[in-house]
Length: 157
Image (cartoon, rainbow, N blue to C red; front, side, top):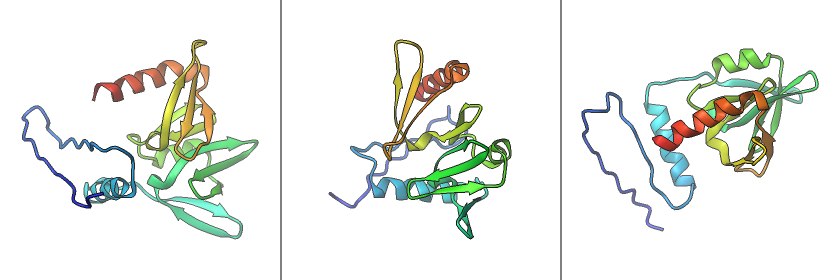
């Protein structure tokens, strides 16, 4: 693969803020690096999220988080490599998460939309979610309409 990135800048008055689209065959390390570089220089900063693993507290980058969910009475923050616990409530974590990246799919779960491999819309009206790491989850019935609207928005851009 050629390591050079083809960059094209199109000036268009209808965009008040820059819009970046990446065309690629697969979501590779170089694509992730480009996304990271853009996010790091865009001036939009979202705080790291503390996660507890054993005796350690680690600060997790929001781009590494796959999902945040409750299991029993515990809040779990899942990344591709590990799962962490949090002493915060789901609502408190949601307040610090980037709303362009994270969406609530149920009363007990928030997902990173950029870590989703695909959405499986079933005939019964349910929506299954498959993440890039192979994990799966479901959208609650009360949130299906909202998720379909979000997917429609992504489809239009």
